[in-house]
Length: 353
Image (cartoon, rainbow, N blue to C red; front, top):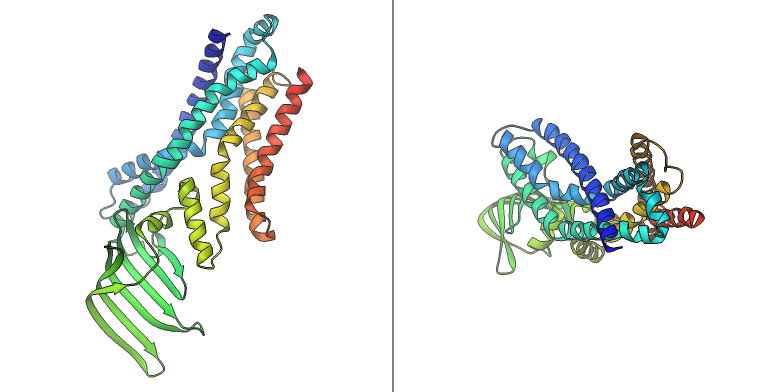
């Protein structure tokens, strides 16, 4: 049975890995084509290639559930087409033993993907985004396309670029009074974090009141803010690009600031529960192979896998925003599609055993 487990594991894992390479390769090619439109100044073709390469670890984890579904359909389907599954069943191997043999390599791939998503992808994505922003900062469109906004109390902040070492470029700070009237503008070429506090460099401060405006220039100016370099490393990324711990930390920070953290909570639960998503997809794939897709062509199996993946993702995309619109906990938006996959897979497998 051990040799049989290894054989099934190699077949399924190889199919999943091949599907993952194809999907990630297509995604990176699309990113490269989009990046070519932004080439100007210091942002050269090689800078685009570097950016695409450094964002690839995030794509690996994002597409793993889809690759697990299509890969299992392809790998197990090839065994079914060659009647190897029939021989295994005739030799006394139960359906659930075959399920366990398929799940073992899938669990290993899931653990590898989880480590990539937690420790590799956020760091490489943050470095890639900051390098691109710095390269594009010298162009006129950086302020509108690649900057980022943040609110802290009565202050609204805009940064052109954030570097991982606690350095900000193009800092704009707008402070409002209790009546939401602008009372101070601060513009600085750069800000850096040393010994627990921020210092603005080459800063212009404009104080506004009923009598008019007063402008002052400072070569260096202390800036009191609750932001830290760690939080800024989170702020520069989209929620889906953050690590699980980073999502939880930033969602807690937003709640303390009285801001809506729904996007980050939803991304947190989606990432935390992604291993269960992969297991659910694999169960659905196995149930299809032992059921309606036993004797169909490989192309049809891939087509079914793509359609199931699209339905699953569409369900997630509908439930996610709905949780923020209607006010129910984002965890339910993440759990419901996964639970449906498990119930459908177990139900169809139980009917066949």
